[in-house]
Image (cartoon, rainbow, N blue to C red; front, side, top):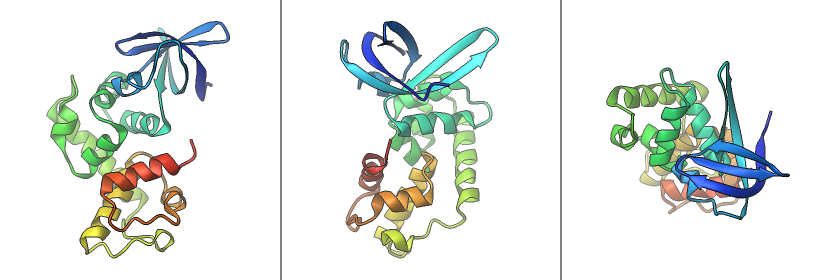
Length: 201
């Protein structure tokens, strides 16, 4: 199955991008987040998630792996389909989605068209539970020099780790990306963005 498609952008319209790969035009469903990063006539690489049904073969494209991870995590929530997941990722960035889950910010999720309060609550409940099961403690890892969670900076680091886990990163991946980084004084969002930029795509 496709991992990514790389080629020239030939069509851009709401929710859709067509990538010419060796003379074949692939239609990909994309969020506004990804759409905003594409330019007509320019080369692009989109990571893909393919959904095959009896009556359809749909390809969803993402400008980076963090958005793809967010999409796939949303699909793991009962009652959330690809259209709903794409709607959410058209309203918030991957970092914003992760922070909405960690901070239980329903409004950030319900801002997406077609996403009601009940679905937003289910997303928050199921994904926070998933994090809790994967890592019973968000306390600092000595490998990356997290300071005690009781302090303000320690809570910032722990929140960043939790948000990154929402995006699909393991504690080992986070530790590797932050190795040698001076996280003291960084905001939660800055830590998240640092890891997203540092991690291998």
